[in-house]
Length: 185
Image (cartoon, rainbow, N blue to C red; front, side):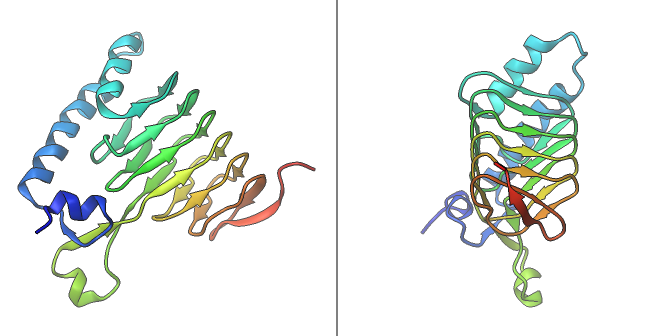
């Protein structure tokens, strides 16, 4: 029998109110509260708190406020930057490559719910991993939906809702987000 955490991480239906998961989210909420209430000059304290939350390869910077579910499912590459108000619902893996830039209020959601109303009323949910490549710029207020893979060298316009995979080397925008043109003209 799998634990609810194992079900969650494997993308199967799970109970988000499982005691282990509730405890882990409470721990993260405390760290986020501390992070989001640091003073502007407390950069080292913010970096320490972020290192306790997420896995980072090399240098990175996240402007508070920042919100996530677990933190340990987030992995960012060298030279990652997230502007104010970033939300990453990391119920499943979120891998972001090198030199990625997130404008203010970007939202990345791995969490989702059953579309069947009866199944949804059971309170069980599931999640789909997200992968974002290297050299990606995501415009302000964009939403990245569960299960999406975004290639490298991609620009996503502000306010876009990314519901499907995007290939390398494109500029994409809209709701739903669609490829507009090649990034290399």
